[in-house]
Image (cartoon, one colour):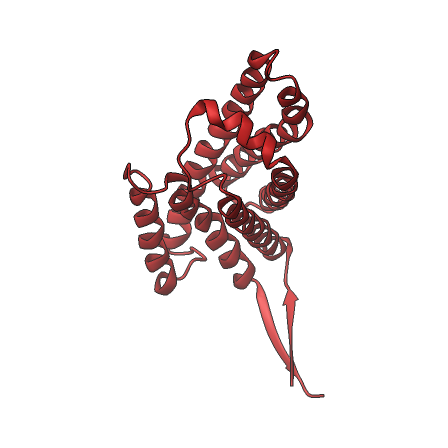
Length: 220
């Protein structure tokens, strides 16, 4: 017996792409933890040297993160295209713009960090300026994206026609909220626990994907 998944429409496809892109980002966060980029306390003065030492690993991790955020952006475009409510259309449009900011930020990382670190001893302000711009793009884009996706998650969970089942959506909401609250505790690894916010687009993507999926069984 072979089960096949049949995608009904572009919203269903967008959900799958959003799920896949977010999963890719979560996996790369795991690799960031493995090499010590997150989960380890270090002073601001130690960061340039650390990035320089592990650049061969970081450049591949960040390249995959660009891929993951690009998939998210494609998903948002499809969801905007198929949105039937003006309010949701606005939310998807904003998410597209914010995704582009994040992708540009990572692109600057890959293209500028290493050359700037090569001359860090002579021109430390060059790297700091570039990093400041990247942190602004990623920080603002990431924070606003989180807030908008959280709103969409709640709408899909609690509205009468929402696609997120309360059976798994409410437990997922509690786990995400716990992760966000724990990330505020000074003694705990902020970025590692804060990665729980990515379970919001992961859950939204899964819900849209499954909402339009037919499972057909054939005999072989």
